[in-house]
Every structure is written in C-alpha cells, then in structure tokens.
Image 1 (tube, rainbow, N blue to C red):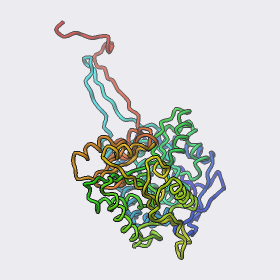
Image 2: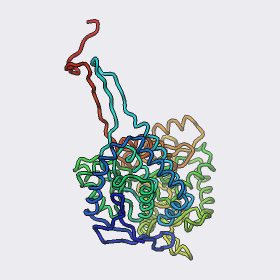
Image 3: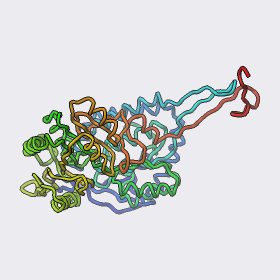
Image 4: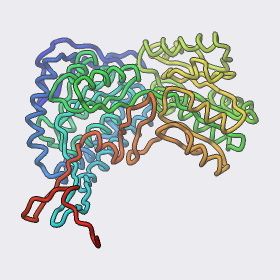
Length: 496
C-alpha cells in the first residue's frame, strides 16, 4: 500500500517520488509505504488551499459546521476500523485506540456546535448614533504539524476548529503514523468537504514542515511535538511573523499526600504512567510522595506493576503495548544507566523485553525508580517511556516546589482528602492542567489543553480557546449620525 498526498480533493502522486516504509511496532510487520514530499508538493497544496479558502470563508459558519457533523457521523460509523488501524501503526492497546477515536468524534460534534456561536461582542460606543462590535474572522491557510502518539485526537484538535472558523489547512502528520491521516483524508472526502479545504502532505519535518513555515501564504502554524523542535518552529515562524501555536513536552507529577486513598492513587499512577507505554505528553513520570506513606505506596505499586500484561495492543487482554520504534527503545534504556549512576534505586523494570513473541516488536518493561532526588536527570528530563521516579517529600509545600521545579508545565495531580490542601495545590501548581484524585492524563475536549513554561507558548488546543489560534479579531464601528464624530476628542461632559 502506497500512501500519497491528498491535495485539492484528489490523491496526488506528483512531485517527490521518494517513499519510506511504515512498520507495526508490535511485530515489525511492514504496513505501508508513505511519500516523502518536498517543497514542490507543499507549494501545490498551498495553491489549492488558498483558492479553496476564499470560497470556504464565505460559507456561513453553521453550514461549515454541517460538514463536521457529517465527519463525526462517519468516524462513529468507522470507529472500530479506525481504532484497529491506529493500534497497528502506533502500538497503543485497542481500548486506548477506541478512546482516541472517540475523542475525535467528540471534537467533531463540539466544534460543529461552535458553528452557531463563534461569538463576538457588541459594546456601547462612547459617541451617539454609533454602533460597535467585534467578530471572529478566519485567518486563511493554516499549517498543522502533528505527532505520532495521538495521530487522530491531536489532528482533530487542530483541524476541526480551523474548518469551522473558515480556514483551509495543510496537515503534515508524523511519518511513523501516516495511515491514520490517510483514513481521515478519506473521511473528509466522503463527507463532501470542498476540495482544497483539507490537504494532507506526507513527509519529514525538515522538508515539509520547514516549507510550510516558510511559505508566505501559510499564516498560522500549529505544532505538537518535542520542546526542542518546537523552539525551532517558533524561531523560524517568528522570522516570518507567523502566529505559532506550540504544545510540547511534559514532566508530569502525581503528588500523593499522607491522607490520600493509596489504592486510588496507585490506579491513577499506573494508568497515567504506563498507558500508551508512557508515550504521552501528559504521562506521569514523577510520583512525589509524602514520607509517611512512601514505603506503603512503593509496595502497592510494585504489586500492581507485576500484574501488567505486555504485548500486541490488538490483544484485548494486553494493558501495555510497544513503544514506537527502536530509537525510542534505545533512548528509554539509556536513562536507566543515567538514573543508577546518579544514585537512584531501580526497584523493577529497566529492561528491553525481547523474549518469544516480544522479540519481534519494541517492548520496554514498566520501570520504577526510588530514592530519586528532584535534580536528577531522570526527574528533570522527558523520557517518553514507561519509567517513573519516586521522590519523597516532607510537606505539601515541598511537594509543590518539587512539582514546579522542572522546565515543563503541562499536567499535575494531587491525591488528598483534605480540601484545604487541594485548593492550595490547584492554585500553586504551575501547570496548564491540574487533576485532583485522578492521574495526570484524561483531558476532555471542551476544556483548553496546553501548558506553561517549556510546554507551550500561551496558546491552547481544544475548547473554545482553540478558536483563538485559527481566528483574528476584527473590530467594526458603524456611525449612523450623518456627521464626523471623533472618538476621545468630541466629548460632552454631562452636568458640566
């Protein structure tokens, strides 16, 4: 199967003739070949998007929303098929695959609802016989760069608000997971989305991503990926005065206080740390635990980690699937030596799993370190795998300080039965998302998603806040006085 670009409503194999294989991380099976596009392909896509967007912007927003309702309906109809494809090319277990597709369905319906809102504001003018209002206006052509770990959900966070706002887009998916982009493009086609509104260009970030950022007709870049790459995107976009929305890394922590429900905390930690094999930007990679319950928590975590099943995500009994590729395996494994050299104690895991059927894929054992101090690299750097560090603290204040003492600020969590501690924590934790008595993952699509510090640059995916990325504010003044009126100059003092 060869995956070619979807441009102007057609599957086009023009421009670059280079392809690269796509593998199933669970067993090494080759699934497809995907096109490695160049600037030429991007230019063709931009030309189509510019032409389509001018017409699309004039379609009433409620009518644009109707396409999203149809896209959501088709996704719901194909949910199981999409989940199966997702698991095959990305590796997450099928239960999570279904959940991710559902997130895309939810986003379609939610953003479709915004088609009858897209609220602006009306305000009184300071001058007589004058009307003042502000409205949202589409920006034009937007570029979307999405990662491999959530190949459907993140794409819908970006593309659906762009669509309902009246923009056309060019989407560069990760080369590791192009099949989901292919499936979504087929859904756009089936839903009757006008040609050129949605375009998919496959290829590398260095080629396709850079070409998108540098193209003068691409007005917005929305990027999700590593902080290192995001910094380069921001720098290059800044040179071209583009609006750049970044959602990047995380070093998320679960705080467990002495009054916590430890059984509940363990459930939340396991799901947050080892779901998607730890390959989430919201994954729990630090557990900040009060000294009074550290030993109990360690024991309970170890008992439950032994029960985790590892294997091909299509097996309904498996709880942890593979990591994305061999490079990811090597990176994760390199941190085990780092942690041990820094003085952390490895309680379990720390090995590449290569026995029997697991030898065909990219599997890493769920790993737990203890005796970790806040400044160790394993407590500061994003590992992006199933590795958790336990850090002991003496108080809530210390826990909050440790949580905030990293360069990232995406998600945090606190387990406590004390409402006073909870309210202090949610106020003082320096992250874009805070959970109480739940893990660090599980965001819902109607709230803003994003973070502070090295995680983002002030923009948000999801929720109404996402519309701010894909719209400009336009202020409109209508003077029906029949004479020249000058704001701030032609004033009349009442009672003077």
